[in-house]
Structure formats: C-alpha cells, structure tokens
Amino acid sequence: MTEDADVVVVGGRIAGCATAIPLARAGRRVIVLERGRAGSNSLSTHGLWPGGVGELSKLGALERVLELDPPKVRWYVLHHLGYTIKQLLRPVDGFDYVICVARPQLDTALIETAREAGAEVREQTRVTELMWAGDRVAGVRCTPTSGGEPTEIRAALVVGADGRRSTVAELVGEATPYRGSKNHRGFAYWYMDDPHAGTEWRHTLPLWRVGTTASLVLPMPENRMCVALMGPVADLPRFRADPVEMWERVLRESRHLAARVAGATNASRMFVAADLTSFFRRSSGPGWALAGDAGHFKDPVLAQGMRDAMEFGRRLGETAAPLLDSPADLDVALRDWEHARDRACLPMYHFANRETCIAAQQPAIVEAFRMFARQGETSEMADMFSRVIRPDELLTPGRGIRWLTGALMRPGADRRLILGQASHDIPIDVATGIERARGRFRSEGHHPSENAGWEWPPRRAGDDATTSEPSDPALQPAAA
Ligand SMILES: Cc1cc2nc3c(=O)[nH]c(=O)nc-3n(C[C@H](O)[C@H](O)[C@H](O)COP(=O)(O)OP(=O)(O)OC[C@H]3O[C@@H](n4cnc5c(N)ncnc54)[C@H](O)[C@@H]3O)c2cc1C
Image (tube, rainbow, N blue to C red):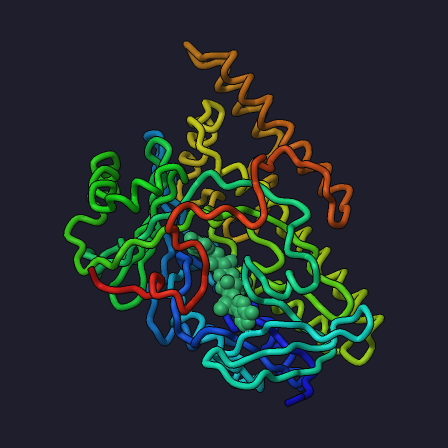
C-alpha cells in the first residue's frame, strides 16, 4: 500500500511531537510513526527547568500537563562542601518553576496535542526502510509491530525523531556521530511516595554532592518523587548487583539526602542508565532531518535533553512548513536550522562533558561556591540550567581569575595542584570561546572538553537497561 504525506516523522515522543505540531498547525499532512505505545515508559528522569516549561507552553501542551497537578518547584538548593546555594528561580517566558512529570504522562500530553493540531500519530508502527528519489529521501517503509503488510509513505521530508540509536540516521548513513564524548557518570533512580506532603520540600529541588556522587529529589504529581543518583558509571554494576546495599550506603554517606527521603514508601524498582555518550550527528540532508536525541545528545547530568528536543523540534517544524514544495530552499533552511541548534547547544554540551567527569572538587570551584552562596536567593546558578545565560556568562573569565587567585591565596593552599587543575580547565574555556566566535559548522576538530574513549555504538555494560525501547518490560515502573 502506498500513501502520501507532506512530512513523515519517525518517533512519537518529545522531539517527534514537537516537530509535528507546528507542521500540522500550518496545514501540512504529517504522519508520526511510533513503534511503541503512547504512554509507555522511557529511561529518563524528567526535570524540566523553567525554559522547558516555556517550551511546553509554546507547543500548546502545558495546560494538559498542568492538569496532572505537578508540584511547581520554585526553589533550587545546592548543598556542597559545606555551602548552600538557595535560589528562587527566575521566570523564563513567564514561567518560574521546574516540573517533573513521568514520561508516560508527559509523552501522552504531547501526543494528544499533536493529534489535536491535526497530525496523525500511528502507534506500534516501525520504520524499517527509506524510499529514495536519486540522492533524496522521498519517504519511508513501515510495518505494524504486530506483523502485517508493510506500507510505503511518500513525503517531501522525513524527520528522524527516533532517539539516540536512530534508525533514520543509520539509513541515511549518519549513525556514527562526527564528534562525541565519553560519559563518566551514570544514573540510578527510583520513584517513591514523598513523606513530606504539604511542606516546602514539595516546591524545592535539592541537589547534594557528597564525594563523587550527586543526588537530587524531583517532586512529582500524586505526591510521588523521583530520587536520582549520579555517580561514577563504574559503580553501576554494584547497584545492579545489590541495589539495597548501595542505596543504604548512599544514605549513610549523605545525611541530607537521608533526612529528605526518611519515611518514603512504595518505592519502585531501580532504573539505571550507563551508556550516556554525548554526541553530534550530521542532522540534515536532502529530504531528511534528525530531531531531538537522534541528532544530538548531551550527558543528562544537566537535565537539558527534553527542553532541547522541544525547542529544536518545534523550530524544525516551523522552518520546514512553508518550504516543503521547494526542495532546494528546504535543504538550505534545514542546514541553517541544524547550525542554529548546534550553536545553541554546544556550550551546554561542553559543560556537561566537564560535569560528567569524576574528580575531586577544585579549590577554585570552592571559591565559586562561596561567592554564589553569598548571593543568596538572587544567585544566578540556576539561570544557566534555564538557559537564560550560557555557562561562559556565569563562569566569566574575570570571575575565573578571581576564584583562582582566591584559592591560591588561601593559607596552606596546594598551589601546584591548583595551577595543574587550572591548566586543564582554562584550555576548555578558551576553546569554547574560540569555537563560538568562529561559528564553524559541523566542526570535527577535537575540543578539550571531549572525553576520549567514546565509541559508536556505545558498548553495553552487562544486562544494563540502556535503551529507551518502550516495549522493554524492564522500563515499566512497578511497585517493589
Ligand atoms: C537517565 C536519563 C535521565 C535523563 N534525565 C533528563 C531530565 O531530567 N531532563 C531532561 O530534560 N532530559 C533528561 N534526559 C534526556 C531526555 O530523556 C531525552 O533528551 C529525550 O527523551 C529526547 O526525546 P526524543 O523524542 O528525542 O527521543 P526518545 O524519547 O528516545 O524517543 C524516540 C522514540 O522513537 C521511537 N523509535 C525509534 N526507532 C523507531 C523506528 N524505527 N520506528 C518508529 N519509532 C521508532 C522510540 O520508540 C521512541 O519512542 C535524560 C536521559 C536519560 C537517559
């Protein structure tokens, strides 16, 4: 059977729906093909900073999400090295709160919004091949996952919004990223009933760093919470082998986290993620584009992926909608879209590459914490996560020099160590500044933020649940 559409979007979660919504609103015939079922789980924690809440609003999905009554989290609190940075979140596009809604509900809200806009979302349909007209992608072949006859859908544009192990990227010959960075942190997380119903904790996002592990608590609807640990990826086999022992060890080491979760009940099983290689792929070509994680992924330690999947999915749809009847113009515009995405995402990519490294905290960073803690609730720390400012606008060269000098001047300072650490970090900042100033597209040169040893596809660690395959029973939350 052969059908016609203006655009086929492969993958019906965040990036896929964000791309489809503006296209459908512009009157284009959009078919979204999703191999899983709407409302299935995905391997992801779900923190959306105010900028991400703003993106939901731009897509017209926020009202549906707010109907789930997620706690509006207005405080960001970072405890580290004896300092506490407590910031009242600043509004972005009028939204001054973080939300955390489980992916089944969040993705369903986006799918419903896409359908309402006029997109056709077909679940349990897997794309297996592309159709070509010369060197131009001209459509897809897909099959119901339950079996049955394949269908061909011809389209002016095929968008791969099909995640990190993108089928579309593979079929256009771009599966291997042109740049990447190895992650050194992994995730272990659980869902639980929050023992602090009706208190300020329900409106606070706390993050603790103890030793090499960061932990955070994200309040969720229905008095649930997501408790996530981001520690050395090398620890994950021990988490899988004995989750209870590891959980108790973490609580022993982090008294703040222990106090926050004391009395929590109805815990889910543990979810772990180890293969979190960051990358950029070539994300556009004749008749095709890659949106969301399919085109670019950064270590989730900064919780930026869903926001970026929405913003650049939406921008892709808006860019393509008026140009679908003019292939040459469409290709140029897709290239420009990809360039703009990279420019916007590179600073956070480099910062996440740094944050994923497991290292003792530097004395110069301790000076930074001291300064941010003094700023009180007007601290700018969380503005970076909301993408109001870039990392280099928060951690400016002037501040860097002040923190470095402050660390060197402290009585008993280990100056060799401090200067050695600075000689690692300063080249990263300089290279990031140069890269931004040059604005080169698809630069393959090595950047000092990029951790060596990454490979594609990432090697799977044992029986790790590392994919977002929604039909994977390991991803279905269940009460322990
Ligand atoms: C452990 C972890 C924690 C994270 N925490 C956060 C966080 O707190 N905040 C945040 O903003 N981001 C977070 N992220 C990142 C975030 O999850 C991703 O950036 C986001 O899910 C990207 O959405 P997407 O739509 O691009 O891809 P996906 O969510 O991966 O969706 C891709 C879809 O494509 C479908 N698909 C694949 N192949 C085919 C095919 N051949 N045919 C049809 N369909 C197909 C899949 O079934 C899937 O549903 C986290 C990620 C991880 C791994």
